[in-house]
Length: 271
Image (spheres, rainbow, N blue to C red):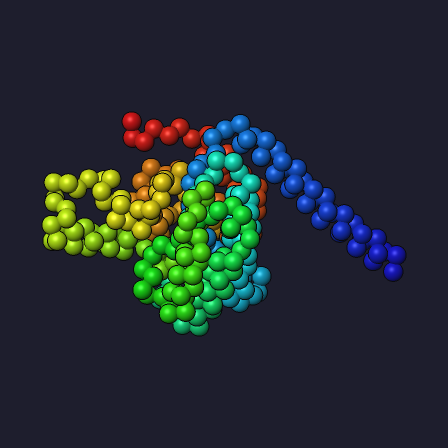
């Protein structure tokens, strides 16, 4: 019995010390990035929820639920960073509708729940965060569209911070939709082809309302190294950071690591 108790105590000490090391590492990383430029706009591809669940013998739904909880934590970590004004999260792509019907329904339930929560979240209103859903909203179920309307209405007058949720989003679809709106403006005589410029096109994108629609840093989790149709226009000169960690396992230290990588880059914008 004593051997069992002793082994159990050692196990507890091991995990406690491990967490202590992680906290110490976080403190070191935060000290390192504090003196550098903090990105004003960070976008994240929340990848690896299903693989996280599979690696633990859980259902995909469990992975998505943990991923949603992690997004809440991520928002809190970002609120602590002075200078970080805009967060854009890739929640659900247009391609994700091809997944099994039951999985899509579970995802819609989670999205609806969190949209409703955001509309009344004290932290959102205290920090004056404007919440905006970007994507083809018309593809979403009616109850989701209503939840989108409520959260956007509740935060429409805020401009201190921006939280963008890319839902039913695709970068190519966004550009096509912008071109359709531009064509309509030309047809109605409100715009001529000679007036077209990059600045004009940007106003017709889903992100046209943002003071800074271009992410300084795009993070993708899970080890995959591609943009997967995310912010194709806006991310033209974004710094990319690919981390080999599933999204539900993403920690504050990973955010700090990504920012440190960003600070070590030389941004020339093609010059």
